[in-house]
Figure 1 (cartoon, rainbow, N blue to C red):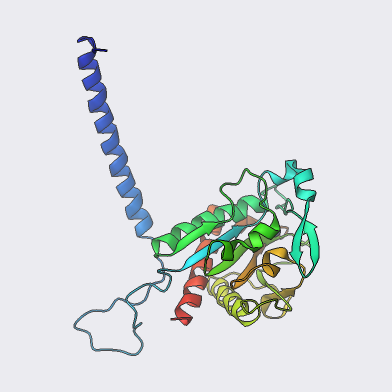
Figure 2: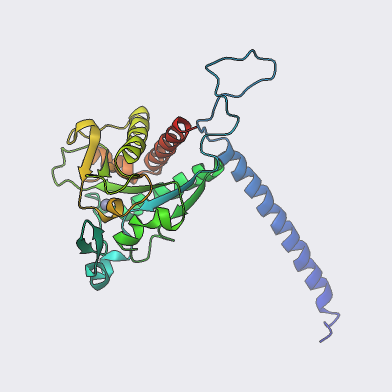
Length: 282
Ligand code: ZN
């Protein structure tokens, strides 16, 4: 159908406005890119062609994370609380045991939920990891759904042919004096990726959290908990670690978890730990 001539000027004005709008979006996106790009991310020292070779300078020009495929598993999900029947479904938990599909998780005294904390830290970590050249798969698409069940989370790294699995959580010890991050690994190990490889990954992540100024839990030796009952770890066939980044019932750590600055620091520490782990393997 021919366009009535009277519409033409209006149409062109809309086109110009759209073009102008698109230009504004592009400029804004570039500005955001500059800001994000300026965020400090640990990288190997830059090599200058004129500098004499130094054993302290990294021999690789690539960031250690480039080419790595990482599964991040943000614990729980925002829809779990309203899905009691789905949550109660029994699934494979490894070692011949079965467990409920998933749980609601904990929250701060102020009501900030663990699933939102884990989701936000995972989003931030994903951005940093992808900027460093890693591929990232998340075990859930948003923070409003149900599950996935713990067996799916546990098999996610091998399902996606990824290099490792990091499950992000925060703990909910009822005693508000209990504080500090800790890592959990499957023990006794059920395959060759559990045991030493998963402990090495845990150590790198724990080191980085310490370097970032967070406090290690005193509840476990070296802030490392060994458990036989977690499907997410039992079913993994890649190095797999669950991180309890904060105690949500501890007022000081709850305040950090509730702040976007705090979640950014957690994400940067997780990425620094993964970079250390990857660098040790090159
Ligand atoms: Zn949790």
